[in-house]
Length: 95
Image (cartoon, rainbow, N blue to C red; front, side, top):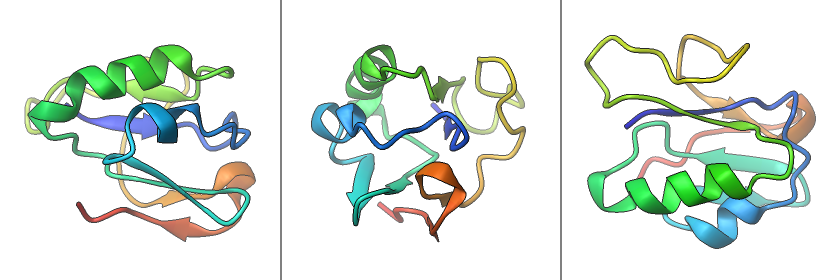
């Protein structure tokens, strides 16, 4: 499973961090870091986190390598490095 966080929408509410802490981390007050490739044991946690996001900023896609982009409107085609909420700092959690 691949995910992309729309960082233009993300407001740093951190519901994703509470529901899937092995995938999402909040650094400082606004810098969201996440692992774009989600391990199998975390899929359900990430689906719940995406559903709980107050601004629906988490786009959930198909498994990595199948050529499908994450579902959702306006999401980037590349699940590369993420930057913090509001487009501030950058980072990717390497787990």
